[in-house]
Amino acid sequence: MLVLGIESSCDETGVALIDDRQGLLAHAVHTQIDMHRLYGGVVPELASRDHIRRVIPLIEQVLEEAGKTKANLQAIAVTQGPGLAGALLVGVSVAHALAFALDIPVIGVHHMEGHLLANLLADPAPQFPFIALLVSGGHTQIMKVTRFGEYELLGDTLDDAVGEAFDKTAQLLGMSYPGGPGVSALAEKGTSGAIELPRPMLHSPNLDMSFSGLKTAVLTAVQKAPDAEDETFRANLARGFVDSVVDVLAAKAIKALKQQKMKTLVVAGGVSANKQLRERLRAETAKRGMKVFFPPLKLCTDNGAMIATAGLARIKHMSDEEIARHFKNLKFSVKPRWQLKEAAADL
Ligand code: KG4
Ligand code: ZN
Image (cartoon, rainbow, N blue to C red; front, side, top):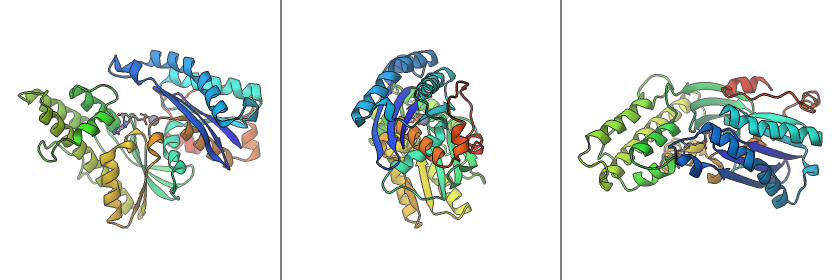
């Protein structure tokens, strides 16, 4: 079965083609980072307009790369939420129009389920059940994943998402949006322990987290610094920030694994590309005889391949009757605040 995946929930237009036997045939992402950088963050209206410009040419590009035509498509998977309403509407309306014209089903995918299942494109891929650590610009969650579609939320951030904390720290250090990769690279040049920052909720009895206090601690350190532009200071502050984040995420992930008596950790979302987090989680799991999985680096941040993968998995779990309901569907909606649990309930 050949599935077209479309992602347009935020600032990346991602399109991909997946075949259930041959795997990922082609994928292409257009990032709007350079456009939003001027404003220090994503401007929703500009994001929607750019998705409109990019989505059709990207679909044509992946079809050509894979040597396929629209007539070969057998289903379309599209991010239905969560995300920016206007941005989501672009992908969802294109998906529905194309599916209607081709008389194929269209499947609405939850963006975080996409991130999670991007791990299925890694080699080796993880086996269910596992603990998932979802770390992106909008989410920081720990889930128990028993099987496909069964997600139990064990812990969540009480305020900022960890990717957001990276982006705000980058801004305070004078770096451009999005800040994750820049802060991570700067931290490599810093010394651990030179600047100690708080590790919010590290010892709290539950699996919840909080990152807004850490952001304030970075702000205070910048304000108090005799020279906030000094390279050593900037690198040490980035190191202090990354060390705090990694300490908290690693501690909570290990705690979840122990509590649930599980041995497999699956990390997903943009921050799963982070070098220091990858190194630490590999070390912490290895010494306990546990395993950790990450998506391929290129598929950590938003892309169409993860949406096509999740859509394909959904179709495979649907009865013929359920699939039939996804044909000729001219009534569609987006779900900007969709919870993963609700998406699972749709199965
Ligand atoms: O998953 P994603 O592409 O979009 C959302 O669903 O939010 O994640 C984007 C987030 C941004 O906050 C970005 O700064 C962060 O992921 N990020 C990183 C790295 N690469 C991307 N954070 C830390 N280290 C990285 N290497
Ligand atoms: Zn994402």
